[in-house]
Image (tube, rainbow, N blue to C red; front, side, top):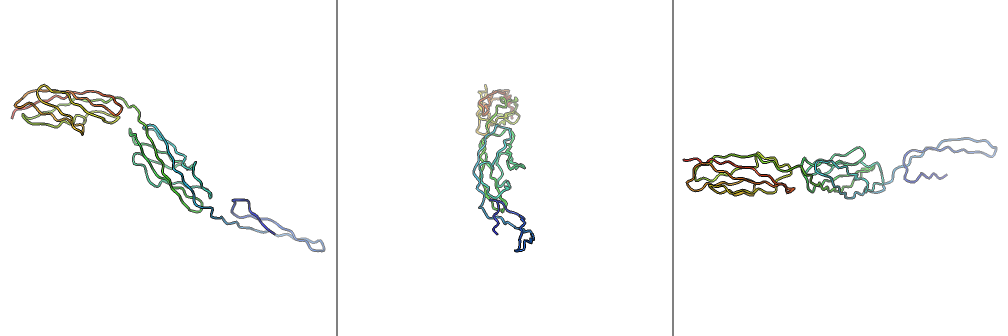
Length: 223
């Protein structure tokens, strides 16, 4: 008697057979068959890509292009993204949430395991596109500077620039010079020997190209 399991199935099966003698008498018995799983090979994980808008989570069906011959598949996070968070869902998908107000290129790595404990991993690349969060909102500044002394003024410290600063430019004061620095500060230098009030404007431009201006009021004091 030959038993043949259904293709791809493993587990316990039972069938009954009957035997008859030459006198026509019969008897029956059960046969219990244990079909052990065969190693069908490790999973094959394929890389994925996703695009989402700034501040918007994205669900990535990472198993959709993977091959898992011995299911069920178990998904886990292997390497976390640098600019957000990734959470594995009950259905094996992964929800990526970018950091607040961040946009750019990010990535994370996941691992898939099959019923036999064999694993494979793949990377998911994520493109987060920018969203216009509105123009910069500069707040006027004031500084006191000793005569014949340069001062560095952190004009952005009290400003709101949600989309990130692309550039800062400085206007020309009447009684000195103002130079914008690479870090967004402005160096004010009063004219030689000058004591009194001075002002200049500055402009901040965000990464969306939107600009706004603020005013810096300077008091140059005598020794």
